[in-house]
Image 1: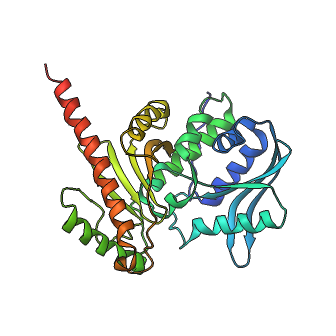
Image 2: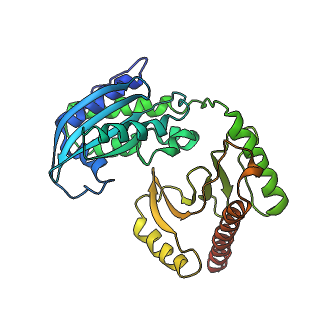
Image 3: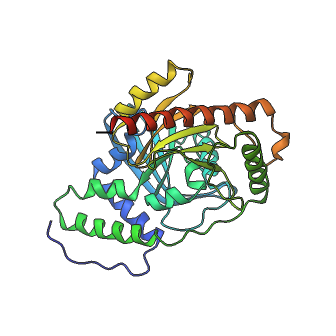
Length: 317
């Protein structure tokens, strides 16, 4: 690819929105990155419209709204784009509310909400994890780098500079209710499950509780509000077949609801557990639900730690 150096001073999310609008307009393969995460992944489609900053007076705005036709259905892609900006409270849930509202009005038959952002932003921003679908800038760059065209070279440089911008220390707004809940959550863990290594700090919102395992690249997230426990394998998004085999084994050994899922550039074994409400005091949540969550976390980490010991033995010479 012939390269002219491009420098994007003051690169903004609107700059990225414009780039994505252009890509949706000219490159069906780019749109396919999004459709591949929906039930329409194998269908022919056509783009009908692309709108930036579509706003609802009460529910805020969607950065990018793509309307397309697939299988004779009107489908909407509702996309939040972030480089490094602090997420607004309930930003992810408002995408769902806007989607439900416009679907009810007949604007489309189905919709799917996404966040598009650098992997670093996704890893460090709790609100980002609440979106049903994520496509990282790195994933987009990998796709664009296969194109032998000067404009795609420019797009890659723009993405590189946005990714670099995202590496600055993140800013976090504290949700007082969530933080109060999480401090009690951590107290409960330390008293009842002291063997677990919960690394999320007490001053965090704690929407996702982070646990480590014997494997440095394998860690566990308890996604408290959504009821997901994700045993996460770093950079394993291309190994879902292998994770599916592990999920099948786990289902035979007591983890009935486990499945293999893609989370950004990682892969995860996801177990469904009861949702906990972090907007009310911890002790007002049902104790049986709390115990189910912690027992599941403990059993999953125990299993992966045993595998870690076995792997260490097998490596002995």
